[in-house]
Image 1 (cartoon, rainbow, N blue to C red):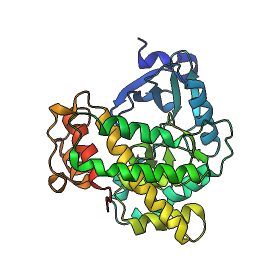
Image 2 (cartoon, rainbow, N blue to C red):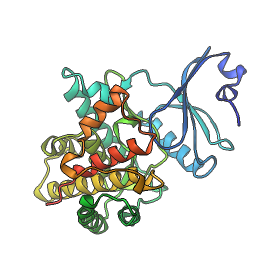
Image 3 (spheres, rainbow, N blue to C red):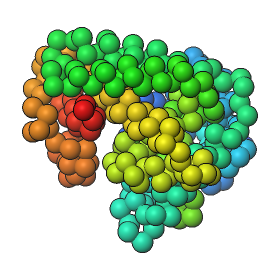
Image 4 (spheres, one colour):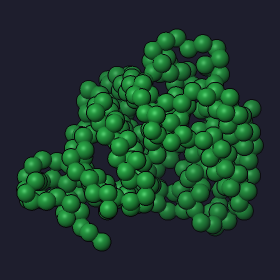
Length: 309
């Protein structure tokens, strides 16, 4: 296996001064912050190697040309490696915790998503609604899946039905959780483009809103910014439907990471920690997302947000 330093040729980058692993995210990719004589960069090594790499790279370059993703400076498709310029900034979650800039950050997220969705990208694959239903079906049928969460399957079905009827599809990031957004002090950048595809224009904002734990009305306000127009009743209903759809799917996705759900003890819904409480535990170092217990707790916390009424 090649070392991170081996992707930084001396005739192009000079000497490598430091390599710092970055442990955010659960995609399995190896991510490093690398400082060289030529500047600061991010190196991402795909967990899938060459599989889908060319498509991801084309997508990343497209977003970078529009100033939404960092510029690509080097790529090795054989190794599934891509080096981008390093965005100097802070995680979006840290920015949102600052009252003085929170509203500016939220507006920038919505504006960035609107700009992304406006980029023509007919070559991208389509994110099929059946994928979400398949994930839900597989996980909810497993032994150990929390019984109280099973009624959320109705939200998956209704969301999938609505997506099948509304055929609008745009260039989407498809994993717009705060871990993949960086605030540079004036605007938002998006990283980790491995799941980019054509998807419904509300999915990215719904994903962000779920993980940022935004009240529904605040999320709808951002939708108006993203769409650059007032939100009509039918648009409101669609977005709220997709919020619950995304909550159920992402909850199932986290539980999918656990090989055996029966080894995890799930609390009742009312006793399950909320997502903000989970974030607090992560900040204290008492919740580790790379363990079954941590994945189960976060998945259950997301499922708890589903409005099952």
